[in-house]
Image 1 (tube, one colour):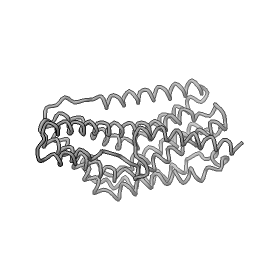
Image 2 (cartoon, helix red, strand yellow):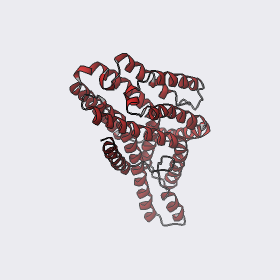
Image 3 (tube, one colour):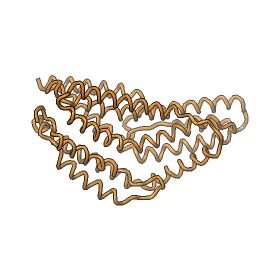
Length: 323
């Protein structure tokens, strides 16, 4: 097809085969049991995904080798960083189970604002991409809807496990404020702090590679849009790719903000309980809840502005170089 677009059949195969490529990256179920068949399933679908990928346009842009490498690199990174850290995953599950049992045993009002906030964001994303794609490209509506449906599923299956961990962590922090006993609050805050360490060990490399490669894809699609004009249907696809990154950053930022609230609560209780345990209060309260991508950068709201600035700079350089 013109402008480097895939045929409906090729697009269907392209995105359908990418679903198990991402679904197979998580080797442990919610019971902490290892699922070995996913490894074979992952590599088989990865090979099929690469075989059916339409790289004709990228060959013309001399970018096919980079896209080919990233198509192979991302699933391999998932396999390596997850399958070599099974024991860390079991540690994370055990700690989550411990916190979950505690909150089920006490009578608190559950706060679903975090959950519903992202449901509204998901709905907004679907409406925006759907309306943009059908309105701007009515002649390619069928092709676009196929790509949208499978891309949405494949991308979100990649991040769902990370989001679920962040959601549980955020809810755990919210419920800490209901604890009236100071020692119990200190104990739970300490567990929550230690919980973030194995969580970061498991997902930091995956987050770094996923964010880097997705950012790379967004830059390529923006460049293709500028190069081939508005008929190319990559504009809504860019939104689709970028939204999981924004969602993950805002999720992590929410967890960190809630953790800061607990720190303030501990400091207020320090003033009310000036005893010999003040130093212990202070040390535990100063343990920050942070998330990083393998130590390269912190994942928080300021990262969004940095990504936009870097992307704009490289895009301007690329366009000037081509001209």
